[in-house]
Image (cartoon, rainbow, N blue to C red; front, side):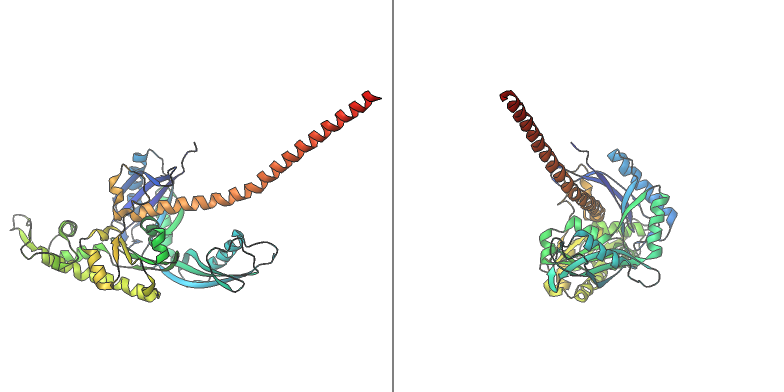
Length: 430
């Protein structure tokens, strides 16, 4: 048996830094070998603000994950998010010189390389170039043109860019932690791999990943990425609202949100009261669960309105049959799906990353808050398979030639034997 290829996903978030080690099983499922997490003190709204603190967090998370999996982590696949992320549409055209052969992967790669050379505004850098639909000799709506005959190849591309400084800081942090970055992946693209099914992407779906500092959005239709956006609001701002509205400490506000928080105030009773210990002998503070829900609902409605604006801006509002899939740590808030359905009028569900996972000893990993980390591992495994396929395809003609040559040699040898026997028989007859 071949040794399974092990990959590592590193999610550098606003509230946590998480390292997940995984490999592909024989059945095609993802097996989680180890997971480590650390507090993220140097990241604000998805952007690295303190390199040293972030490096310490990466080292701690990688150490814990490596010890659990008994693996020495050296190469990681890192997620990127933040308000600086932008997306745009562009069209590329390629006129093929060799018209006798079919369109190959090399032609697609040439188109993608042309897009990589696009002039971006100062201080911006391209992160992803994602092909959407192809046109071959004015025949539109082709998703996979490889193997087709044609001269003029055109394609629509979804291009994702980010600030050079923000990208550079992530690379610096990973390098200072003694690791190498294999790939930099937009976080909503990673999350979508972990929680969305092929049917949902085909039907049309919105992925909403509510993290600590940002809310990431990815819209799919006909299995093609149509729109991406990052909103600079997340779970941390809800905690801040509770801290100010209830006049409590930040850690108390976070506990209130996690244990008693609700996105719909009307679902809670007026009689439910929470008692919080006072500071240094002061009287305990009493907070109504319904009042707490009002604070949370106001901020969550604002975040959902931003999401709905992005859905309408994409132009796909009426085409999204599968509705909205909520994931990330913020998706664990009670009654959130009902609020989303009420504000947007679209179906909603919580996306758990356990669909692609084989039976794991780490039960905690099935929480929506680890969707990005698991998605990074899945994306890395997909990239490995794609790299291996062309090598296998290149090896096939050579193997075929070797088999043909071997068969020809056998026929030639049989001919020689027959000729020698025939000559010997003729000598005997004489």
